[in-house]
Length: 475
Image (cartoon, rainbow, N blue to C red; front, side, top):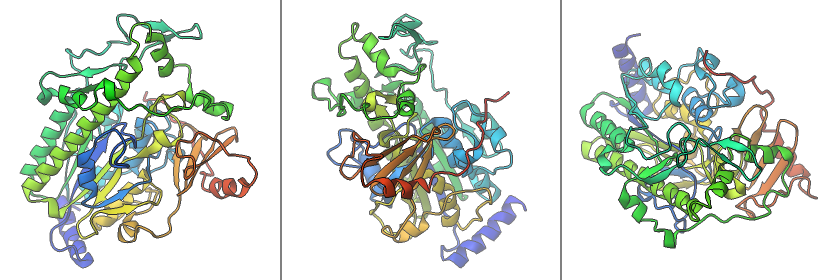
């Protein structure tokens, strides 16, 4: 069927569903590495996100929203394909997810096939995935370079002029080229996220056809670069730091420790090694994260302003999500790549015309549900390969019973998040259990304690029965 034919059939379907004659637009906002330490989740949190709060007031905020995997590539591949990492075998950032899912119709492609104009800017795919889909899935795709020649960041793994550093254990380790933060650029208009959103705004303003506009905001991913005014919001003298328990790792299985401290990603050791150069290096990094997160929130505000000014807001579905959370030293860990709350808990907001505004849903949900939710909202057929379930019932009744959220990192390692508990099971069979009601920071592993056996069994039944073999990098 041609695009025009698809659009006619689609319009008839919408009329039957009660939407009226105009198909709804979709504004699809992805944020990189934003965790739950924002005022969206709690007014007392230090990271100011007034525009995420503003967006939540228009629709439904899922307070227990979770990623499918705490790593960029498996998370984004899962969101866009609607397939779980345990089904696809896409577990790592170098996994070739096109090879893993050769017959999957990804989300924007599905909308394009059904009469939508599709556009994207910024980080929607994870790096190498872009080459596969930016032409077939989008009418136009602009991925601005994330690194500029004048950036102050360490180049090619350099940190302060050195290629490696000696960790406390005596081993020399490489330094990530992302390991940097600070005020950049001098002209805020030149920031990659500003240019990404500028381009998205142009599409909002200039397209009257039903559109699917995907905007991928890079910050607060490292390096933590933001204009000066965002650093000014978080002066070092008044900086709020994460609460960290010194013996937090004492009750963890060996598999958990290995995941927290893999040999090639010891950021915490990097901070320790650099303290002799800068006693406040850890504080400055956290300041950079907070500034970058607020700068990302500012970009969301710009998108909402443009949508309002365009006159199209009343007929536009907005979804906002982060690909995963982020550790800032909790559990002696930096970044993501683990199965704890801080690495998997994300901002997750859905605004849909015709549904109640300002709703709060406390049921655990995950990004595997985003694809079928959008097809449901737009009265489109859902491809057979799509897993997860539509969240539309929760948009109607936020307190209804709902299944737990499931997360996967690497083959055979899974977490199950119910309303109260987080259960983790590793490939070896070792387990962890946390009571988030009484222990929100996951400081006490209560697995195997008296009285927890039934709780663990009830959560373990949600762990995927089969774990696909890992997919390697592209040839």
